[in-house]
Image (tube, rainbow, N blue to C red):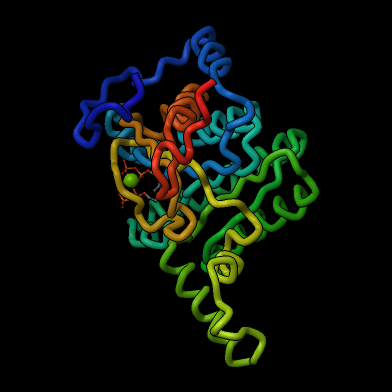
Length: 276
Ligand code: IPE
Ligand code: IPE
Ligand code: MG
């Protein structure tokens, strides 16, 4: 059963996932998705690598390494059902406060993963993109990322955005600075600032806002991710840890999303399709 129906914060983590993923069930889940109402943009807070490792008696870094397969699964599933933008929270501004050994290992894993995967990403029409304070990343990471981004810039099937050294408050502070500088230079009239102005000055400019936000590991918080952009996103939580995330989780999340009534402040009768 999907976790959205019950409390998940203190869920017991069993070795099996809450979403079944046999091949036949996977196809069954996929076939139930309404292709006309697939979210354009899905964002994921990939959480629980450390707890997954602990559960398996391994070092935290093994959890991070096993999370790479889940990234592949999420991306493949997103491509298969026609999602245009997948944004993954890979490293937050606050994650710099982790032990140096873990931070360094995460940076190495990022470089290795981009190097290993870039050919396949390119062949599959994936456009790689990154948001966050990229200047704070080690030189090797920045270079590898920039090469991957440049190489895949012409792809149009899906945009994979990695949020790296990212936090929403960092982004909002930068947006305010940019707006103030433009106002000072006389290129932005403060009276004319509207929601589009703000969206256009964020690092996600040009992308639609995520309609669906997924978080793994049972935590039900946003942890400084895309605060402006998720104003009306549907939230989907699973107790499963990120290294256990499979295509079936994404399909289940999209199915649950399609069952929700998105009212945007209106009443049900205003948004429900007329009954035949
Ligand atoms: C998510 O897993 C990966 C990153 C935040 C980089 P965690 O490392 O946060 O795993 P837990 O939450 O400690 O289990
Ligand atoms: C959020 O996970 C950041 C990423 C997934 C990159 P954390 O594990 O850092 O979040 P908190 O600290 O538990 O809120
Ligand atoms: Mg965590």
